[in-house]
Length: 316
Image 1: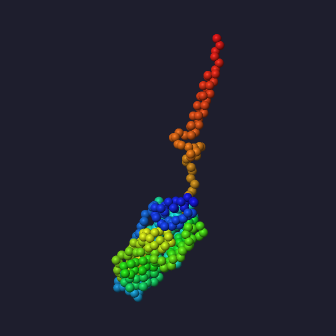
Image 2: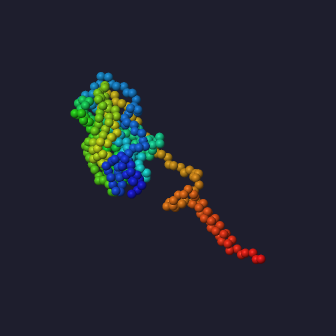
Image 3: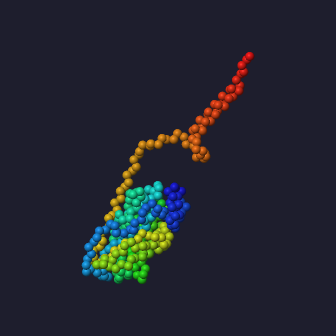
């Protein structure tokens, strides 16, 4: 078992995901080195002008978007990777984009491995709107997480939100592609209930219904392809649903990751040790080289004493 995989298993014990394996793991470690910011557009958008006299109705609910980061620790797991990870990628296609919101930051550097790690914006597809507490809103886009050295690719397709009778669910199509050597089988879960959402008590204003950072929890381990347990906190959901006459919020900036420059060799200012004691030897605080010289001195002193003892006496 490689060192990176062992490290992943140790970190897994803290996070508590459900996937285990004897050869490797596809289970992400917990987030411990990054600062979590709600995956919403509050800090990124500018004030927009609403459309007075515009009302959101079942006939005109035709705009909006969904901004959701899925789960930040998973974005870090794939986007930063464990030591030795190669070929990792996160991509967004078919109507989804990766934003600069809530990016993974390490040592003050966002996206430290050059892979975009921000939350995702899914574009509007369709809606069946009755009221602020009873509607279905569908969004378009595909996000792909690839981790070749851990033998998997996870795809999230076309999320949608349903809310009715006090229950709000975020659904999506989930597919896990596992290559030979993976500890789990490939899965394809269409129309899965992915997360339970707690929406705010929001009402449309000038044709625009907005949720900001609605808390979300995982509905089942299977819904996330076995990576986390049911009830695990997911990233908060930001949703807009708007009439065609409404003014929607400013689109958040897209990610622009910079590939970190390769480390340049520097002069080694620490002299190379001429001798390193065998690891099995106990440390006494005295350099081994000095001990060898002390032995030589003692040997010479002993020889001198022997020669003195056998020195012929003076004749009288």
